[in-house]
Length: 94
Image (cartoon, rainbow, N blue to C red; front, side, top):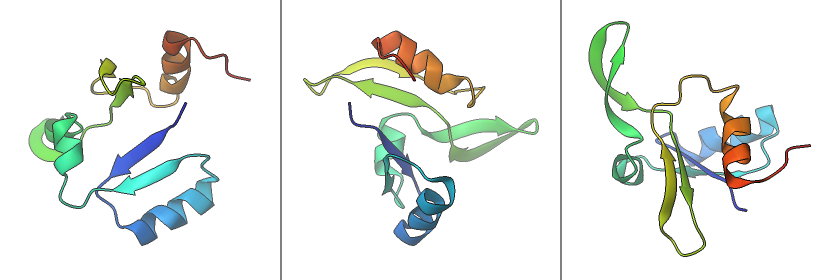
């Protein structure tokens, strides 16, 4: 399995974030938000009761055939979410 994170932040910002948090996966920079928009990870959302444009925390499971197998839009509880994804795809987390 390959895990990739995407955000509009710069590559330099990503490198600092990876080192600070000891992340075991790749972060891609999408400053134009094209990839994020295509996967519904950037767009209109509510923040403090107002509609704004921004990053929408979500997860997309793409199978080996390149097709989307599952999409989790608008992830609410980020701390609980990785285990839910692992359970769904049948990977034990140790």
